[in-house]
Length: 142
Image (cartoon, rainbow, N blue to C red; front, top):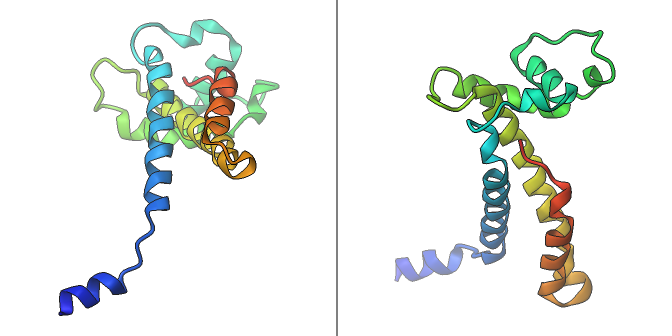
């Protein structure tokens, strides 16, 4: 009797579980797209923005690095993940790992926000999926 009362007393909200799974799926997709930056090539050779982000995460940035010194959100979110990975990752670059996780957090959240209004706005679940797939090339992880 008490088990039935406890079960009915507990509110069940499967929607939150679906949201967590969906956001996690977007995160894993983003991580998979950015995985090559961890040990297959050095992204610092791609341009000055990568070098600036790398220096900001490691604390070697300079205020003369205009316009990149004003881009602080992604590198500062990456710093805790860099500190977690430093000394623990064998072949992965800890700075690239931190930047990848930071970018994946933002791209998964953006994909989730794009996907979420889809079914409620158009009443077709496929429309939200289409918008995420259509806009996903704009998100670069890593």
